Image (cartoon, rainbow, N blue to C red):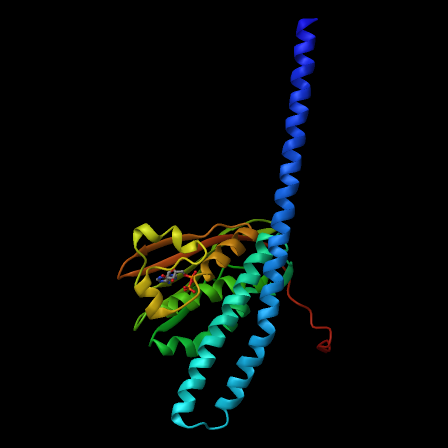
Length: 275
Ligand code: ADP
């Protein structure tokens, strides 16, 4: 009888604790939703007038301004671009953190995607006098099913950093076939540079929001400190994990492994059959 009373009492206590936990969880969720909504509203509200400022700076620059005016306008454009990038990245992180980003499965040609990225970054490579090369394992199937938009965002971000922190050097993107099964292919991606490198004590923290190598690096190279945070989160969404190896003064290697379903050659319905 005594034991029964104790059992009932402890059950009641447990129920109460569970209820309290539920309420606390709901409260935290509501607070997090409110925070995310606030961030999203503020960012969108900032973006609209900023677009106008950027647009006008751009237009005025095309009007052949005098040298002094051109310097002011370029500085305005630089700050405007930086703020736009910053706001877009905050919006993106907010979207990811509130689980609003989903994988969009599309049949795509990996080689084509990487070559498009290579072409779009050709000019940027010349800024710091870098060479840029792309190596794709020939045994990788041409067509895969995955999220090409997120994949290019990840790779573009890593290459942009690699080109930014490397001078008179080389940046390579290497894609190897890790394993091939009946329906899946697992690929190993590497973005390698011969740039300034990252100190051992910063290898983890560079992926944290607003983290930058050092005040000097920030002053010299600019940047928001959000790019790698987004890269890490996107790779996680796609089912992978980012790795970083780096030696100061020698360069850095960012790598990750992702699995794709095997795709099929896209059929062009407009194409007339050959006779
Ligand atoms: P940022 O926009 O400031 O470049 P990131 O999140 O992309 O922000 O990178 C964070 C920091 O990590 C950078 O400020 C830099 O110190 C370091 N970093 C990133 N990529 C490289 C690289 N390829 N080589 C050297 N340092 C890098």
